[in-house]
Amino acid sequence: MGRSLEGKVVVITGAARGIGRACAVRFAREGADLALLDIAADLPGVGYPLGGPEQLGHTATLCEREGGAVLTAAVDVRDPRAVQAAVAGALDRFGSLDGLVNNAGIAAPAGVPVHEIAESDWALMLDVNLSGAWRMIKAVAPAMVERGAGSIVNVSSTAGLVGYRDFGGYVTAKHGLVGLTKAAALDYAPHRVRVNALCPGSVRDDPLVEGRMLREIGHALRLPDDEHEQLFLRDQPMNALVEPADVAAAALWLTGDASPRVTGTVLTVDAGFTSR
Ligand SMILES: NC(=O)c1ccc[n+]([C@@H]2O[C@H](COP(=O)([O-])OP(=O)(O)OC[C@H]3O[C@@H](n4cnc5c(N)ncnc54)[C@H](O)[C@@H]3O)[C@@H](O)[C@H]2O)c1
Image (cartoon, rainbow, N blue to C red; front, side, top):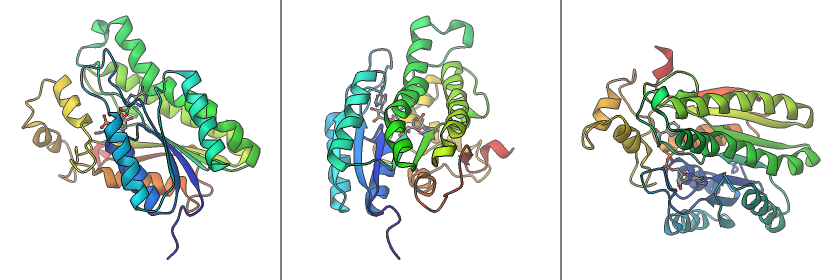
């Protein structure tokens, strides 16, 4: 069987580790060339380490081993100029863009009820988790519209569909991302550029991809470190946490040519969580 992303170029944000790395490696295995973006530095206010430059480099190495051509860039999705420059760099290097996976995100600051959220914490959460995705779409859309082809996947969350206590900023940003998905899907449908949202449930922090968001969500909820997986598991109808590879497989389907008329959809990968 042929590789499903052969000859395609995909930009992935938050690619240093976690779900971003899982998508990158899977996409490279399917033949894609990749522009891997990550802040590759810590962010004051987030309260836990973000992906580092070595982790971004490691993702690139793993993708190259799969045969993909890779460009990496340290880009904070809050910075419109850096975002535009990185996308211009990817276009320069690869000549065109077929896909974007808007995956960069933060789980903190969180852990307090809505009225206790500080102005700066609210602004930071929305800036990264919602406006960052919008900035990336602004940067890639002109080239996709001009070619009349492209696929954008916004990594939202089950927090984009239902509420979670003490996660008001995150829940608001992820619901916003679902709205942005539908609005952008309509804007670009005439140009055959598809925009879809992916809503993962609780994703296991797989050491292979060095993800750590579930642990950080647990921290914000004051769950003990060694028990958080068990506690999240209790809420899962399938009695299983989602694997980063499950999310990558869904992102692959939405990005590639197997879903040509799927746009504006919201795909949950949540082991049944939001069906209850
Ligand atoms: N892990 C889960 O349980 C879960 C569930 C639902 C949705 N999600 C979403 O999936 C995405 C990936 O999460 P993950 O679990 O891999 O987390 P993670 O913390 O392991 O990885 C997130 C990556 O995003 C990068 N990043 C953060 N802020 C950035 C910024 N301003 N600019 C550029 N890069 C930035 C980080 O450096 C890191 O490499 C996030 O959008 C998250 O909200 C995760």
